[in-house]
Length: 304
Image 1 (spheres, one colour):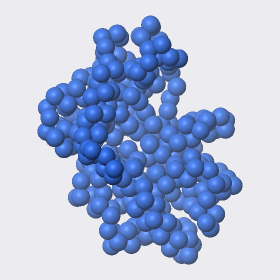
Image 2 (cartoon, helix red, strand yellow):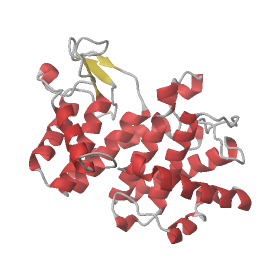
Image 3 (cartoon, one colour):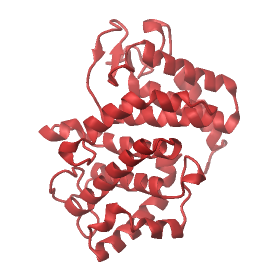
Image 4 (spheres, helix red, strand yellow):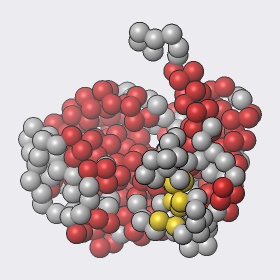
């Protein structure tokens, strides 16, 4: 890392260890959302915290082969199910619970929880070679696609709060995390039905974004289901860029691992994908150039 005394894997390992220190036996386990127990929400064990921990642990293990890290990830994943935050029968994921009432779940349904779970299971499969992690994803994948990429939006990725225009700044970015992790799962699963479903949704979302929400300078709105005014707003740009990076993750060489490797040839081939077929030739060229630029700048931020 520039101007530091460490390296990237050391940073990742220390971050993982510090998160692991925020666990106890209340509610049977799990990691606190905050380090400060006296703050508002200090006793909250959020689902996203657990899922990010699982993913980070799997990725750290791939680099270090430290079996303790992998066991910690497995333990937290088991707790996510045993605590009731994840229901394998229905596919429902709850947002979290306070430790003073472990079964009183926060019942908000957010796309990023589903995306992060699918991505975490993909990384766990890559780390262990165990098919059970991909099999475990089934009910959550089905629930997610029926909720956030449903037929009533023609498969375009949409946060629930968009229907009432009530998404706050953070919530506007959730579906970008969802899309990124769909790409992770796509690259790891061999289930052609799932791969087709993901590909169709990403195609529909990119096409809707380009045709409905972006101006010629690529200022893009964050809502892709209706014609929206392009705006210069960092959250809209972030979520739109995340979608484009996810599309590259799907259409680049699937044999190159969970992280796609950028090359000009594969990007040129991507231009013929269904996501761009209904956009004018000039816009397709601009889109491809913009994707390349955004990808180079943000690749590490999104995929590492």
